[in-house]
Length: 334
Image 1 (cartoon, one colour):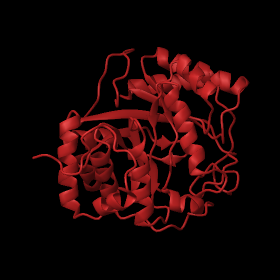
Image 2 (spheres, rainbow, N blue to C red; image 1 turned 135 degrees about the vertical axis):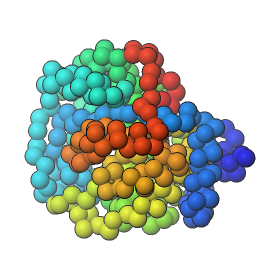
Image 3 (spheres, rainbow, N blue to C red; image 1 turned 45 degrees about the horizontal axis):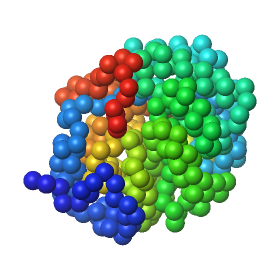
Image 4 (cartoon, helix red, strand yellow; image 1 turned 180 degrees about the vertical axis):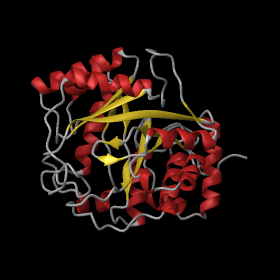
């Protein structure tokens, strides 16, 4: 049985959000079944890519993202911390590798990358983490073509830069940058020869249309992103969204399933918010095509399931971490 909505090529340019909205509105189990078939066609069943994320510079970000604990515009429990020493980052990467991660992601609470001593230190972090045999990913805010090229030269594999939400709702969440600013950075990343990691957040108060716009934008990127994180809002005291209504688990499953159908070859990561999901909800997300998670107790500044609970869940579901040869070049979409 072939999936009816999956595009015939890796890219479905200029998708109509109305079509995606109709996809999201299909009966849940029917949607999950189609997504599972697409997943089986394009990915190794039973394998989950495992990453670990470290905040290398925390707090004080000048952006006003309504969901973010690190924005200087909000009064949250997060303390500002300077860029971490190189040795500490390398030690954390070694620990992540030993605990089963094959990709190490580093995040700095910057609006944009600026040339200078701190960027030079980040480049050295990339070199050192790469030397450990890990895939490397950073999320540093907006950047230009030459900075993207320097990151690639240092050995970076992936650059994360989430679109967050759909175009019609974007200004309700963020006013200090535009969606087009984000897309310009993704273009610089792609032109430099880096793999793209970009996704969004559900639970911002967005209507269904905005979710459809987000997925349509992601799926219309050419080529499509190798990695697509689907985050659920983690409500943080002191942010404008601290009292947001929790997202029903079924809405998250729909987003994962639709992402899998629209982006067959992408790795779909079940990201922030997993601590509020039951094992059953996570299992349905994996069935619907999610095949990547973050390991570790914390995602930047928000909680994440413990390594022990993740190991137990994966074992219960018959899933295992993806393995690749240490130091080998990463495969597309891995």
